[in-house]
Image (tube, rainbow, N blue to C red; front, side, top):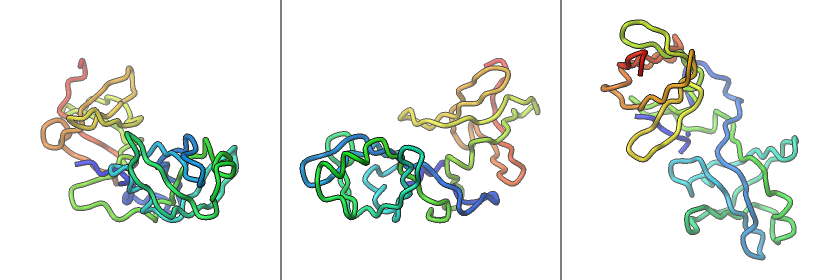
Length: 180
């Protein structure tokens, strides 16, 4: 199983590494709320990570989410010190990051998506298929985007397709034909 921050926490990674959780996309209402595109598995759970480190026009800012809730297909949130629409407008486009050490440890048998990114992918025959560039959720399962001699989309299905994840060695083994 792949855990998403609520989409990284083993393998000797830098605990201060910044992890992207979402982006502020628009204002919401007149009281300073903002709309958020959240990458977290529980979309509204993005507010559970506190503080946020916002990357806005090339500068880092620290912000404290006070509350968040689902609104339609998205999330709206209130940020400490942002009490009106004009102030909220200044945050549009900000990327929401957290430090790696703010993530809870992955549960037994789970890994965070970001821990898979950059792993070398080999099949059962030992053939090199490339490197995990990123993942996406297609509903039925997560999908690895592997870039090598060509781009491959490989379903992240533990036990059937993904047979081993070795974070220490930086290798993900798959039951996948090189010609697929």
